[in-house]
Length: 128
Ligand code: I3S
Image (cartoon, rainbow, N blue to C red; front, side, top):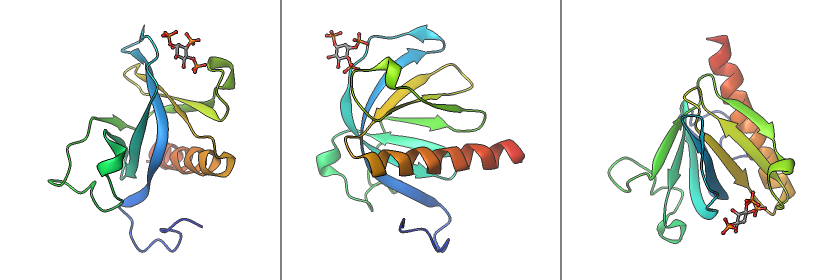
């Protein structure tokens, strides 16, 4: 179970290392550039950090580390996307602004957890 399965820390939902590439910006297709990213799901946002080696689960906090980018999950769409890569365990996240990311892990259970957790946040925001 996740560290937050008891709901005692409502802000930070999940953090971990995933492979990431952005494939579209504002609906315009981009060239893939896969790299490891420290991914943090906090509140309504998915936040990406560079240099995962220097990151720890506590170092995402404001002031400690500058995010590379951040994604607003309100209105976002999530789809399994194994057709978009030769890698296994790939999903696509599309924001309302037309930014698209692929996220991937070699570990089946880990990518499923990420998928479910992000989808739960999207569903919660859809109901608001
Ligand atoms: O969808 P593509 O074009 O097959 O994606 C591959 C390329 O981005 C490739 O880089 P080049 O643009 O230098 O060929 C990457 O190295 C591959 O990882 C990409 O494919 P995968 O299947 O890994 O997503």
